[in-house]
Image 1 (tube, helix red, strand yellow):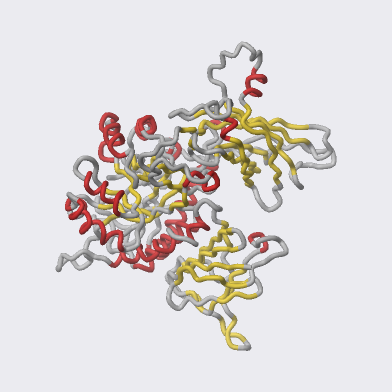
Image 2 (cartoon, rainbow, N blue to C red; image 1 turned 120 degrees about the vertical axis):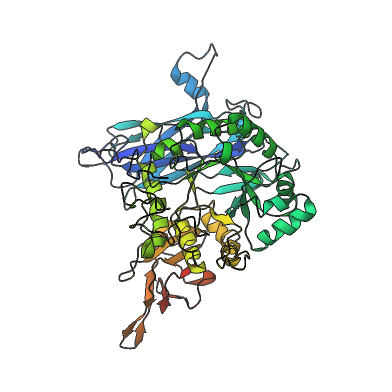
Length: 610
């Protein structure tokens, strides 16, 4: 395929000379709520934006109105689509009747541009079924409106802000199969297995747990085709699960793999992402497959479109498929894989709840003649990794793509319906060949690409493809090196305590690279009184401590006060080394994480505590 790779569609909006503005957004905390729950949450986002919003009211002595604590007073109401209540005589009275919560959000843009306020609301009182309120269970999304105001510092004036969201799903609980919802505050998956009629404790988030899917796209031929009953499924699938992986995207459907799907649900801890890509534009076929899959206890999401941007599918195709899926099964999100750096990003992302990207940068040829006999450059050509640099920049190609997607989302504003950032999954390269890729990644490259993706917001890792072709094709044996490497990391990322830091708790906070170490990529997550620090050397050269007057001066990574437990309560010691490359030995003192050497492609996860 020869494809233009110039940017089409995601264009930075014009920055207003009158800005920056206060841009207010609202969304439900979770992508769905159940009528068995008693408490819900909204996320109110206040952004200092150069593109969207309204000016903050300023006092006569305050030139911009930005400095200092400000307060947004707001009401969040359920939109009334067909209000026939004769007592309702105005829009204001209808909105008042449909109020879900009133509250305030305090924000201060000193050193930050985005702040989120999580607002609790009473689902029982809001529900017409339980509390007589306006909220009714529905398989369709419901619309909410935030109306708020901010006063000037001296109280002499105020500005009104309005934000809308069409993303409130309030569903009847079900006792068959699984349910997955997305955490709009932090981007991760929250998974609930089959309930068997039990509602559990109200305080346990209705039984949902943080879920970080880590696994492979898995072939039918040569793998799952051999799973025809429980016995053969055990011998086929158990070795895969034994690597430590917790998820799979089987490249097969019903009815041929019914035994495999049932076995995974009943006998393994594997989550299933269901593959619809081959016939995703055939809505009759999609409906039949979703009907068959929806009550599988291992199902965590659907995969609808595979690289619709690269194939230049109609913009409407992923949207139509998502809508078909939701009409039958609104209890699981829908993922789309995007191939291009930016080819009509907004249009192709519109049909996705989850965006997956398949940056495969290892062993590519970005400058010479490609398999199609055409030079690959920034205008034309297909190198196997759209606009990637490869070689020594390969690991950064992954983080660059995730940063691109996040940046494009910030460029979507009220004219596009103020879309909320979507959950991201990275598809690690775990293969070679096809005329594009000269070699497999090494385990160290695999770990570096996976963890740098997590550093930049990925909430899942689904590698292509299992079984991995043998590197030595003369003996025809399956290569287990990369599945074992991914399984080793999966046992850390998918389990406590690591998963508790990165899913359902916080988005990653980026840490700056120390002087002289530009290839270090670092993020951290705070959870209660601990901090998880992730360090990735994205380069192919070691960093070593410099000679000093008293031996060597260690390589140090400062832990800034902004991520301390409080301004007066820093971290004092290393509580655990959750993950680390050989020869990467850490110490901690004086708010600095230090080591004598950070080898090429080294990766480390360190837990600090007070």
